[in-house]
Image (tube, rainbow, N blue to C red):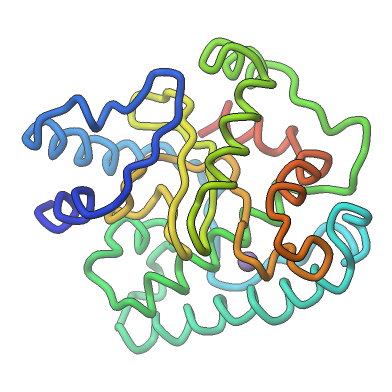
Length: 254
Ligand code: MN3
């Protein structure tokens, strides 16, 4: 726990939810309890169907399927080079760090402070991309949020538009490489935040903790061929791809 607290104090804590920053208002002691409860909740909340294996899952669409928002070349390089590398290096780290073959990726992420930097980067990188592919689908008029998740977003953020603006801001202002997230915290509140590199809210070293519902990759490799330095344009266009049915299933079943 000491390590997590140290980590928290060093990092920019980004929490842009309507309820504001819980962390800022808690004492260090309370924060320890908060993080411990998050970790416990993470373990309990991940249903079997959302477990992520160590291998890459096949994409449910063609590399060109996300056109014109994400071009085929970007998707192909992203899936077959970047993401494939995380899976390969994760499996190597699992062997060299003597992780039991029965261990789950989520359990590794929950205890990531016990492992090497290589494990942190590749376990995170693999988990994040597997989620990223599933939270997208070809652009369509069906790609609008509905149901219980829509109501929850409206309740939490005021409106879907306000939620999107806050999420866009988290993604646009993540300095360097990283991810922006919509996640459920320990109390099942919807939160928005971002993480550097390949960190994610499942990691016990992360400044934001909870169960990720969706994340956007804002590493330059995710958008540079088409958008170059215009990360904001990529983020705004990305909403056309969001597979809300899948995100709602994570929200309602997690
Ligand atoms: Mn990527």
